[in-house]
Image (cartoon, rainbow, N blue to C red; front, top):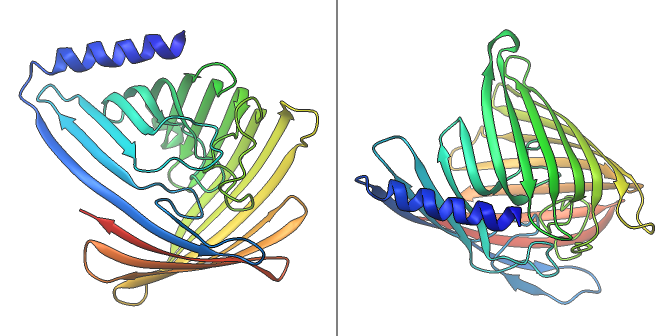
Length: 292
C-alpha cells in the first residue's frame, strides 16, 4: 500500500515538474562480467561479483531545482530479493530529500546495498561537522520496511548507520563480500536490525576504508546473527590504473580480494578481480566497464 502511494506520488510529482523546461541526460553504465570458480559453471552476466549492475540512466533536471532520476537494470540478479528491474526511480531536491525507490543510506556500500521504496531526508549538522540522513521505507510484503538512518562526521571520516524493521539484507548486492551475489535468501528472509560503523581516510596516494557491521534479529530461525568487518586500501599512484586490496572477516572465515582497475580510455576500463576464502581460491572474474 505504501509502495503504491509512493509510486503514485512519484508519477504526480514528475507530471508537475514536467511543465518546466527540462535538461535531459541519458547514460549507459555497462558491466560485462565473466566469472570462473572451482566446482561451479562459468558465468557471463551484466552485473559483477559484488552485485553492481549494468544500468541505463535517465536524469531530468528542472529549472526549479528538482531532478527526476530513473536507473534501469539490464539484468536482474539471480535469486535477488528485489524482483524489479528498476534499480532506482525517484524525485529529489538534491542533498535535501528524495521520494521513490532509492539506495538506502547505510554505510559506504561495502556490506549493505539495498534499493528500497521510501522517503529520505538529509540535513547538515554543523556542530558535528557532518550530515544526517533518515529514510522511512516500505517495499511491500516480505521485503524491506522500517527506518534507516546514517550520520557522517566529515572531519574524522566516520559514519554511523542503522536499519531497523523487517527483511533487511535480502538484495543480492548485500553481503556480496562474503556471500555469493546469486545466493540471496530471497523475500521473507533477512534481518530486523542491522548496525554499521565505517571509516574512510586518504593518506598520500592511498585511500583507506574500514567498515564494521552487525546484523541481528534474523527473520528465519535457521539464520544466525552476523558480525562482519572489512578493510580495503586503494592506490592511485600509477597513471591510468588503480589497485584495491581488501580483507573481510565474516561467517567464521577470512576473505581476500585483489582488484585492479585499468583505464583503457576515459569511458572504458578493464577490471579483473581475484578472491580467496581461507587461503583457497574463491573465484576469478573479469569485467569490462563501459560508461557513456
